Length: 145
Length: 191
Image (cartoon, rainbow over all chains, first blue to last red):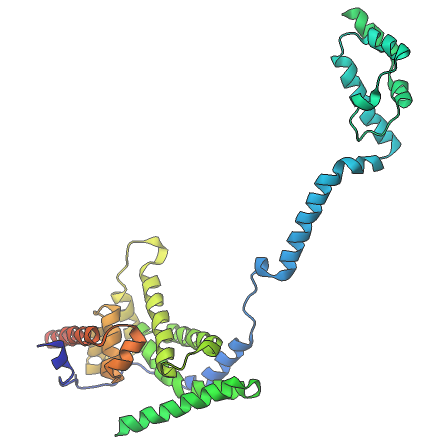
């Protein structure tokens, strides 16, 4: 039989009824149930919300700005913090230097350009820098060499 | 004659729904009208596919919500009800496919599950009745053949409209119905 012939086939298996029913009153309540659901805003996905996006953008911008301006911010550090930072830099310089006495002597005749040695963000004068150096310790260290 | 009258009536209802939907103030009326005219047809269409009432209820609600949200994009190229059927049909097929794929296990035969639901949904004295046997026979068909059979046999939907709902050519639908019909016939002869 060709598929076309099916159209004219007797399409009756004895019934078109179904063996199951819808619960009583179901169709009366359905429109209200569905209407209520159409009025509810769909669950918001937090990362799609403008508040989250603006927040994230602000955070990233602030992080970038902080990273760029971080060295400058140390200028705002307290004098104590600044001195500690300078001491570390000076000690590092002197320890890597092979002739601390010569260094001290050289400094006495031709003052060290501390501005060159110290990182640019360390706001300290050459005078203050020398005040942080314990010359006797340097000389003792040199004598041990 | 009656079919033509029904079709004209359906077109008039669709127009009224779309007209009411266009105005913000009459939108709820459009929704009520949509539900009034299509909820039963859509429910029985879905129920025949998934058998269980609760599952059918969920799918019907989802279909109407989807349709309502997409109504502003509805193109007047097809009847509103074929569009609704398409939404519900796709949801049904996805639902049945998901049931088969549950728990990442190999494709699972859901015929026994559907039969169990059929038994639970039907009246206790219906087991020997022809409508029950017919459903048993249908549950042995592939989903798409079952769909075609339901639309053609129960709803007497013209092949042209079925083609719009299922996105399949009329020839393929006729062949599919023919195969389904033969399988059902054989099952009923044997049982």
